[in-house]
Length: 398
Image 1: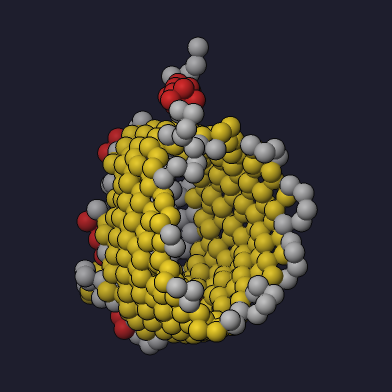
Image 2 (image 1 turned 90 degrees about the vertical axis):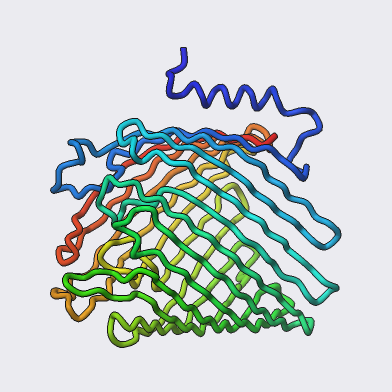
């Protein structure tokens, strides 16, 4: 007999094969979605190695059940996509972390004539925030709302201009982490040159305004983490050969966050490379340097420098194997009241491997393993940790 933990996966697959009618397929507009996942992490709450576990425990297992509707249809030159998914996750040991997840999306890809096109959309997601920089057994749900609108005018066969606006709002359930609640408004203006080769060269100007409604306590003081950030970057998509593509968005960034003193500026951006020779292998690599928010009770953002490599093996028409390795070094900006600013840094290493089996276009089964470790920062009071995890998921669309 099947292990009781794996039985729901088998039941989902059997019901998926039996329930899909002959007319249902990936090209239909409306789909009913269902999925189930099992996972285990031997250091779920990212407890430093030199500290005891909460209630003498570090690891935990969980089950996630998910269901919803997916709608995707084109009307002439307009495409409407709607997603409504609800999930429930239950943990074996840390039951106070049990939560209901949400994933709601609405997107409209529009086109007017032969020269105007764009996208308008909104989304809502609710998940359990990671515990990488949040040391607690308290449940900390993160709710993110995003709304965006963008439009592109191709005024010449070789030139186009694009403008866009996006608002992202993040709220956290845990009172001890509410200082990371924020709203970020980003406005972009881009001019692109489109040569006949299919490559793209553009210049992007971007302004971001971040507002934090709750001041962050630091000792006897409180600080507001609101900021403005201005970027001027070059965007390049270079089809180097038939098998090599280079995507880059690099340039200059200036971040002004008054509670940290003077403005911080410098080079920032990301470069992605993809190499897909003839055969069953695809290779990817990335390097980046950029500012990023952090879900911490001590600081609000970091300057991250990182690199990643990955590979995908199309073993068969139905089986794919993915492997990725990521290294990121995080440098924290210190307020004047902090001491030991020269040690305000750490690094995170992550390695993952996934095997995906897609027996039918509407059914997918995936198994994955991951290893993560962090070097700590003595000044911030964060220790080094290691974590090993595995997941097994199955989902189907009807």
